[in-house]
Image 1 (cartoon, rainbow, N blue to C red):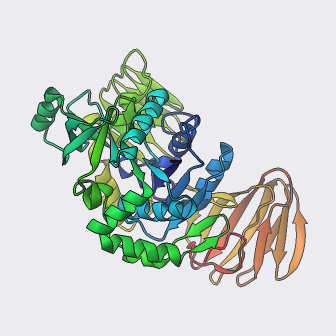
Image 2: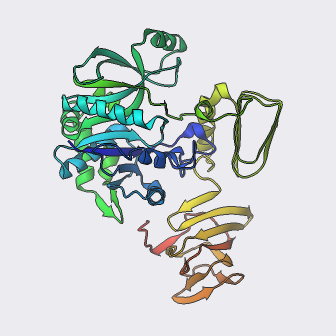
Length: 470
């Protein structure tokens, strides 16, 4: 049996706002180290016996960021599958299993969320080896984390009788997130494990049993994969996926199957589900503070203070979460970390954008960030990576001035090309077909001044785009 890691990267991480946002969620951020959570998930697979390159299932809007993050760590994925909409873990796993079976009739799928922290990588590899024994014995395996506290933020798995295949146990039952009283009872009993959301399946067995218990999911996923299209380095699932019922692997299969097994593990695991979880696992100072960025603390204890764009000073407080970004600041008691999601709900209901985008917005060609905005004008800073180009486009409602700060710009206006160097500028009248590209070897940075009656990002008519965006 060959092992194929499948990484699910579709989450939004709303409880880690204001750093995690829809366009740049927590799995694509360096929360617990220099690498992003996704990169760490991939890197810890190195040295895993019989494991191939990872297959990644993700949101369509994150595809270029994910591809770039894989290039940055020198990993060529087996594939990157794009979901038109999120449909939870069971459909994502089904699509991956179908694809793997077309390549290998004996494929075993190791299903991993992209946003978990695992400190003890050797123990993680050893747990997978134990799980492979269970799979060889005809089991659908999950990994249960040995609890060290009465945690109410996780689901639990009650282990049953030990199996003859390694350290795995039968699954007695799955339990929803408990009250604190029940969590204490679970911890004291020694029979309960945290539900990690990591799985190990024979692809064939997984699909056979999914067809038995949820044929509606199986059918929709088959159609979405069969009618999907290759797009650059990505596989774009058909919109039939949007009609697929949304369900988790636990509900769709693991709570119903007679073949569920759980492998108890102690691997230094944390799902980093809230800012308090990041404080739990971080390296703190003598006063119990976890700090990052330009931070000054005086008389502060047991707090997380993170500055992304400017200095943050805190004096005489304790047990706080303070997170600063360019356009938002969060201050909360650590005991209310789970309530951060309420801020995101408010932003959505109010029609605001701070839950979706940072001031710096990443694109496949580079990024742009807002500097200033007023009545009928907007100023942006733009970076275009070497060799990249924006789409050939036109605007109905705005004109643009471009001033080159560094690098070289090739500008096309109504079919006429010109090169601009540092301190040179150009004007793009409303209605002009235009394109910006970087023909050089260093990043191109420029300032864009927009003026007009409407300055929204949806005022773009694309005529040609190397990234095949709509």
